[in-house]
Length: 463
Ligand code: GLY
Ligand code: MN
Image (cartoon, rainbow, N blue to C red; front, top):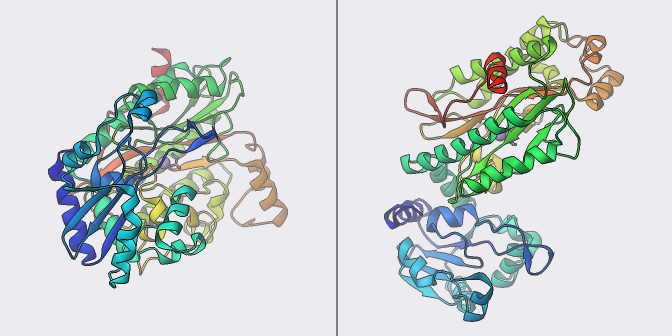
């Protein structure tokens, strides 16, 4: 937890930005796996955590009454009987004190409190819920049907939270660097140990162990696969074979829930084949070209399109695409090979604030998200600002189902050499991903550098 001054200052900025009314933050509860008392690892709601710093205690609500300049933590202390099972849990007054919250009330008083304020005409702001248990609680507390909660959630509140959480402070960057360094350790282990004969899941388990050993957990389920042609193909029982190309996309989050997210693609044997190197170097060129352009004021959408142009040029050199590069990208033909976006915001969520809506996090009133295949999966399009933390993750993915369906439809035959593409249908995929903070003059890589060229990766395998 940061010092209480951090949380007090964050809440002051938020209250000023929203201006009036009640801000309601539901904390997360435990979530059952297969029976009530067997839980998934507890994960606090990121906005609750950002404004209170209180983690690892389920079923809390936090309220800011802007007009009356009051903050209240609603919750119940663990009973001695609870503690029989869990061990000591810090009392709520201690947690509230560490967060600079002066008023504590039992949970049973929350509903009356909220209804009373609503009756007196105060606007009640809440963020769109993403967990069904929280939706059901809000339905009961606010007397709004679950199906209408999103519609009643507060755009003003969403915009204020996004504005504040998008710009990372130095103490946040310190946490993110910690997360990225654990992520680098995971990748170093994967590159050195994901050899033929081991199953994808065996290695993924080892990586999860490194993340947990780093003090937090994984920031999303490990993607480690010889079938990297599918964007988010999680580790399976498949055993790696000589000649396979392994795509590993994984990240750690710290105990304070700040995330890392990186991807490397490496051979299950000791070296890349010539063909693997050729495709790898196209992705690396797109990655480096995109990184070069990171600076405040530049639309991330334009950097995405630049990366698409570089990928298309490389695919043309390889004989898989043809025609005018810019026209191919404008038409969306390159999306046969790059079906997603160049990157996303990262922070307390690996896709930061995605629960608040991509339209608010990645776009503006004047820059709306495209509906074109490929571009519609770009989560961040707007202009970069100092303090933004983002990923850069171009890739080339050979998806046999997509290749076959486009070929039957004769889609973009002026830009795609389907016969030649067909020779790569079982190639898999390559992605290279790193995390950056935008600075006043450009960008800085987060975390320790990790082997990135084919020569550096082969050297790391050989060590
Ligand atoms: N690394 C997973 C993702 O960015 O979606
Ligand atoms: Mn990512």
